[in-house]
Amino acid sequence: MKSFFKRLKNDKVGLVGCIGILLVVILGILAPSIAPYKPEQMFTEHIMEGPSGKFIFGTDEFGRDIFSRIVYGAKVSLQVGVIAVGIGSIGGLVFGLIAGYFQGVVDQVIMRVMDVLFAFPDILLALTIVAVLGPSLTNTMIAIGIVFMPVFTRIVRGSVISVKENEYITNAVAIGVSPFAIIFRHITPNIMAPFIVQITLGLSGAILTEAALSFLGLGVQPPNPSWGVMLNASRTYMEFAPWTILFPAGAIVFTIFCFNLFGDSLRDILDPQLK
Amino acid sequence: MFTYIVRRLLMLIPVLFGVSIFIFFVMRVVPGDVAQTILGTDATPAALAQLRENFGLNLPLYQQYLNWIGGVLTGDFGESMRTGKAILPDILTRFKLTFELTLIAAVISWIISIPLGIIAATKRNSKTDFGLRIVSLLGVSVPNFALATVIILVLSLYFSYSPPVGYVGFFENPIKNLEIIIIPAIVLGTSMAGAVMRMTRSSILEILRQDFIRTIRAKGAKEKVVIFQHALKNAMIPILTIIGLQIGTLLGGTVIIEQIFSLPGLGQLVLTAITQRDFMVVQGSVLFIAFIFVMINLLVDLLYSYLDPRISYK
Figure 1: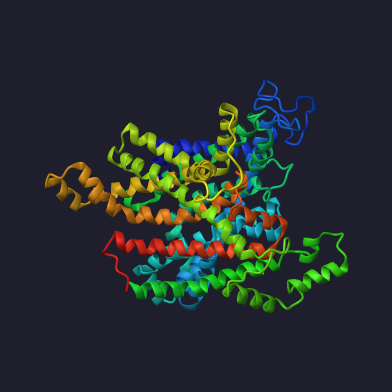
Figure 2: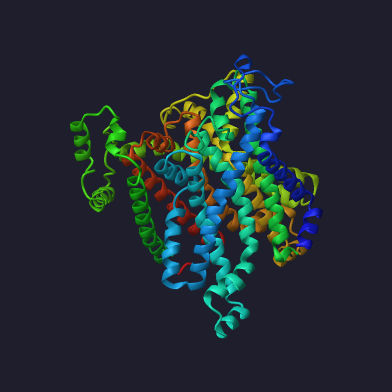
């Protein structure tokens, strides 16, 4: 762990990404203290005003403060990222461990189901699931979680199959250690590197997918302050009030960019060949 | 090779059946009465009964599925629950646009990403390399819907130009066709370019470290020959893999891009059908897109052996 932080400290690009993510996390967690106004508070005498001292990012078509909505939007994005990736990664971990360890028929069944889910472009699968469940924040998180599950399953399964060949696992089997203990005590800790990297990439992917679904009107529903919702709503007025679109777009790009910077560095740091 | 292709095609059959079962049953677990959703709350009981009768919604689920899949296998995807129009001809007409958009976007992304990836690799750790890496990471980080909206905004504010809506076939009017397609294709292509550029850079760097490159250089070959004749060809496998994966992203991306630019493609068809809850259209078009997606992946696999003769398929 110490060497991990030391390597991260030396990796300037990764550090920038990490600081950026921390900033978004702080914004999200402390949104009620940081945002000057409530996200749904309307200032009817200040409709579509440009950035000023009172409203640093300007106001939208209902006179709501864009900065406050972006700060609260960070909370929504992080919530979606963490819960959706949580669903996808835990599901993927369980299915991947079972498929990789037991192989045979169980493996075939799990992987064929994953193949089916893989046969859809991500956004299309998410759209279809949301269509069934109905558009809402919770359903968006469930849909994205399901979409991400096959990637995690494949990564975990592949790593398990390779780790399983090690002698210490063969020895554990020979001395009668239960499969449950082998999987959780000996295999899981050894497959964590690619899994963690995928979690970082998954977080940015989930935030992006949520923004896309909300942009299409099938994710988080107004008046919830999702960045995708804000971007979609401002399309009608963007020619008269460009700030309504530039700030939410900037928030999405900044967050994804930081996650990608950090994910890239994490991949290098956790890759044993590069140590 | 032929046997391999046949085997791979046979392996696709269970996957596509899985997709059809998944999409069919997912559409059937939608809460509420489908007929009521389509006809609205004011619909008379007789109209509701008629719609259920027309689309076989009274039948047991397995029978509904067998009727639908039987039709699909004979080229009949059924009719839209909203318009009553046959689905397959509509899918095929709209697919022309989506296919053209995806193809041009892919070509644009290759034109941008492969040369820049090569430059970044050959100038490793220089300022150019650093700048290009940041650009590629930005490319990966900018969502296509955000880029599309900002481009429309810039074109409108500074050039008083709005991208045309609708669609005209390439052979009907090539200039008009390109005018319609080019901006959406650039937006879509840029989102793919970042990933391909990053892969090009890293796989060329990997190849340049290998012994055979040192031997070629030792023989006095020019750097151009080393890069283009030897390194690039050997680096193409991972590049092609990422291209194959990105084609899926592009196909998915068309759903959003077609919506933003009001292009009547397959993506827009799916999205409209989803919002209108026209399940017959959703399941037909999603199955069609999944079919195209798995076929592209197969094609990419087959291209591997062309690029790297060491990969043989038995």
